[in-house]
Length: 593
Image 1 (tube, rainbow, N blue to C red):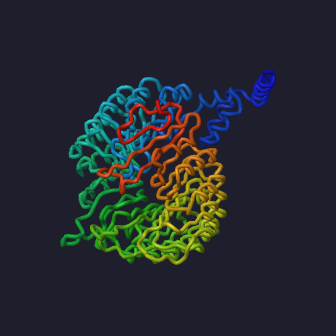
Image 2: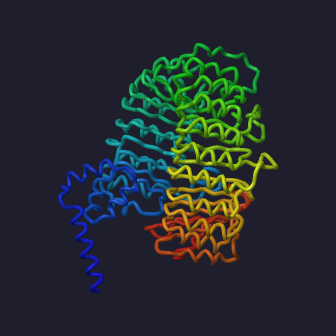
Image 3: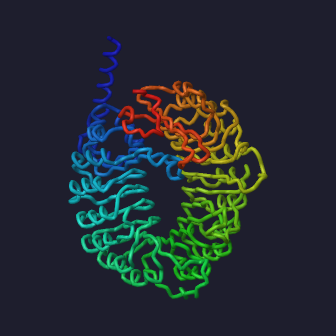
């Protein structure tokens, strides 16, 4: 007891010493410049006084798992929050790997946010179920101060709620609905309501939704909202948007619109003289083909962002466009760009900071002109030609150790790298890729997020051990089909001191190895696994039990969205205890009651 008392007294003296001479006002001002949540957490651990100061000065919080805490507990910890980002369904839900009825209702959160978070101005909900009633409750409480509402990949609400938001939230600067599933999609009256009731709107995004949008209402919106900088819409024919672009004076980013169906024999429209406002420098157009790409040529040199993911362009078409875009900072394409297209990117786009190369259509259905592939040749060219990249996500058909090592040698600013190796080529140039992964991680010391999804045999246990050894700063990791045995996973788990979130697919580790790894990864807060060597009872998973640790089994649905019926494990830290809304497909393993 004496030892414990002296320890507590020493802690209090240390806290007083560290705070001595720093007025609360000054400390609050300093904390205002500290935005990284890890730095904030470290500050809050210095002493109780600094913890209170952090609580009162923290303006934004991201809750990465909605079931990890309760809104009441969050309010007690951070009563002055102005901005909250809340995620629910696992990221795998974006790929139809999670049952639709998994959970993630926003109702309990919105009720509490509306009642107690008196300074809340911005709310970002991601992968959650949001009902019309939820939005009504939120609007009644926060309409007078709500500046940003983001419903990101959410579902459950209708355009009726959007009309309510548009009529009531007159200070709304951002309305984000991208990739959400919205009922009554044919009703676009909410856009007219927004145009006639809100004059401070800066961002409207309903990209990749099925919402109807009439050109007349969109043009009215642009005319009335003189601060509008970002407009991302659903499908709306580009020829019908001429008036919109002529009316816009401040628009900097546009996404959406569409061209006539490329598969139909229609007379080509001349787009050479199409007008885009001078301020526009970030652009994404839907279903653009070779006959329409001339629309970009007069404006290409000033573009900073270009999204060509949803186009009907060939490798050659990509080359013609990209070579006219020397100022690109963000480029998003499909792998039809090929190695040749990436070579043009490397030669032309020296300012490039973000590059996404998505998978094309293997079935040659809607996008039937795809022939390009990406291999180590294109990866090597980008690594050597675009050294300022901070984000790079790519799908490749082949890759070598030398290409991965080149990334580590040249791309020193990468903080997010993701690679998916497709199964298009039966034989790969080189196996395994252990040394390449080691060279990449040793060179890219700023990496915070890392994904490496390959094929069985591409990364051995030795390579998996390298990932653990050289991932000292990585906080999020996705690994697919890596390693050969439990030994590789255990070697991996002895490293990664900063890893908080780990996702594993198709790695075929045993339950016992997964449990031991979870215990050895000291910073781990979240673990999702699909495709492992399950035991008959799941008892070996109980080895990972620790305080405040929830373990859930997601049963395979042979007729549902989980392909090949593979079982899943989800484990995460939670101060809220066991979930109370588990559907039949989610079986809580711990806590059991």
